[in-house]
Length: 249
Image 1 (cartoon, rainbow, N blue to C red):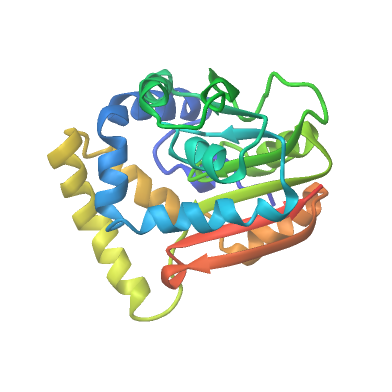
Image 2 (image 1 turned 45 degrees about the horizontal axis):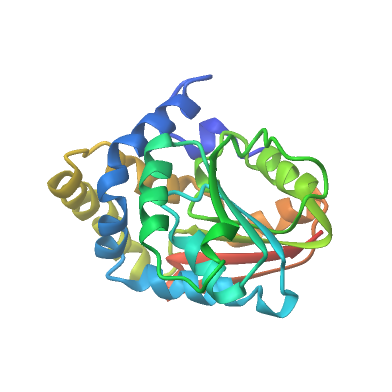
């Protein structure tokens, strides 16, 4: 079974999702970082750090960070993994504009800033040759894919043999009472806070609904295996609010 547009995005019709998602993220780009930290009570920083550190044992030299947004995960990977090259790729020009402003302000060791670049691109149709990167990372982006399996196949294609895929994604808790509490929080608090800071209630209604529609970790595990990945493992953070996947080509 493919987890495509009808599963992941409850808003759009055929052929509309990519443009709507791009426009939505363009609109919330200026307040995106603030709301991420605020709505997660700062726990998103720890999720990112622990996930990036899972790649340390492999010492990847070339990294592609997909759905990079405003660059938080890209900068963290640059600092903690010290690759020779890291490319952040996102569909939203608005997000990339913020990322480049943040890059200019980053405090990094000499020469490291020049190793980071940002480009606009479609994760389902990457403009890179086969076996290009040692690692591909994507944080909080796969649930927006029109076709999850197609996206994973494209990541598999651009990874070198024995390269590693790291996915970090928001997920829905499965156990009482966290599931019920999160449902109330995501349906009422997130849209209200999102509107207060970004004046975009729809975006912060869309985001929790994609979390609810996204398949649970065991299903994603099966999809990764079916796509060709091996040594797949996953770890849930904070009662299942976030899940990390690590896989090898």
